[in-house]
Length: 187
Ligand SMILES: Cc1cc2nc3c(=O)[nH]c(=O)nc-3n(C[C@H](O)[C@H](O)[C@H](O)COP(=O)(O)O)c2cc1C
Image 1 (cartoon, rainbow, N blue to C red):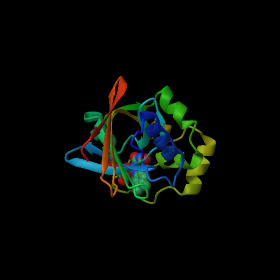
Image 2 (tube, protein in one colour):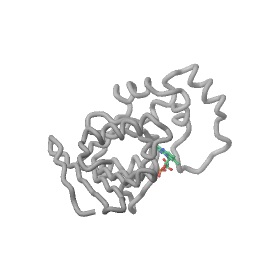
Image 3 (cartoon, helix red, strand yellow):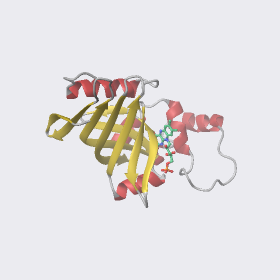
Image 4 (tube, rainbow, N blue to C red):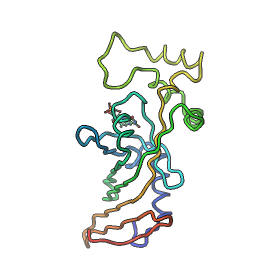
């Protein structure tokens, strides 16, 4: 990260992270408010018009919590770059609509299989379906699992970037005001 990092540079980095499994920001920590503050890992699926996209199972407790309070934060740390990214925003969900279907059709079969399972976190009732069976089901019905699939777009309000370095840490904030206000703040 350079001193004159623009918001477009940030989008490039996040886009690369979405497209590369080995990128430090490919898996981000998602913080949200439930009975208590919760945190979990999510895969960064895409960056589209100032949003971060992740996917989830509609029955998961995190989705119930985010419906109640859609204000979330995302956190990543790139160890090699010695760089932390914090993103704050509001989740807009798509479930059972055209947008969910559109994204579904862009996904690999292997990514669709987990949506045939019951909701995460519930007590297990017997043996789970085998991967082979899940694949057969999907072959027979390409939309099987779609009813449990939620697309979450985090509409970004603010990005806070911290770069650790010997000569003095650097910290920049990118604030969404329709356009993007960039300011350097104390690290
Ligand atoms: C590397 C990694 C990536 C994950 N990606 C996702 C994801 O994209 N979406 C998701 O819902 N859960 C993902 N999970 C699982 C969640 O972190 C969490 O454990 C799970 O969704 C259960 O959450 P809940 O029952 O509290 O809602 C991921 C876990 C790991 C370890």
